[in-house]
Length: 102
Image (cartoon, rainbow, N blue to C red; front, side):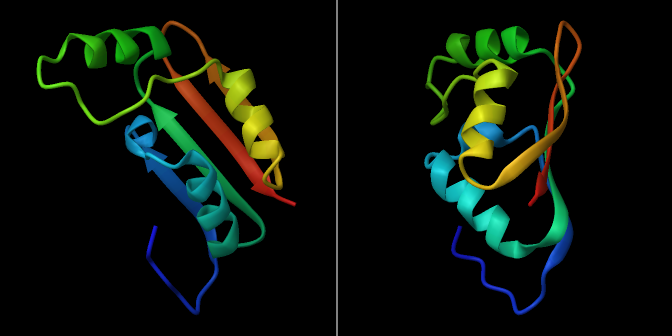
């Protein structure tokens, strides 16, 4: 979250790490500030929300993480921070959000 850059990016990918960001609002704000106009933010997991949440709940030394929420809630949260959803998938195989900087 402390990363600074004079460049703007076309795409930021958060792959299998989103639950571990403590401050989700800051994550979206930082991503938004680093993207070019029309740039994309991708949050992706190659397993379902239920599988990931179950795995995290069974670790004895609890991970410093949050559970994944329904993709509609994530999309709504992102929209309030300037992103327009262009693709979502929340099923038994994948959890994917793609939002575009407006």
